Length: 154
Image 1 (cartoon, one colour):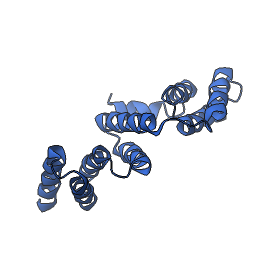
Image 2 (cartoon, rainbow, N blue to C red):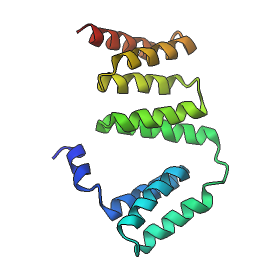
Image 3 (tube, helix red, strand yellow):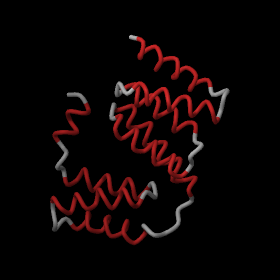
């Protein structure tokens, strides 16, 4: 069974949401941890482990986390969602990178690929062109720009 179909089967899994909350806590992404923790608690209000993980995220959310760590974690999540075929989440986390680092060419390149995969070719071209304005020698962005343009011509 493909991973995306499995995800649908487990979309209401209390344990999955708790594990997602824990993972985000470990990545110091407390806002995202809170969101997952809330979902686990909504599904099982008496699940103490989920309550504990949620409360931990809430207690840490206002702490200042080094933006470089957040950027790297968001990029890693962007790549992970690309590999499992969830381009919507890839786009979401790439945009979170850009909110912290507006000149991050890797995030623009990730957006380009996600938009190609989502058949949003004008957005893909724009993302690659933005990456190349920032880093004209970025070969991967050049390759992905060519790919987006070739897809648009088809």
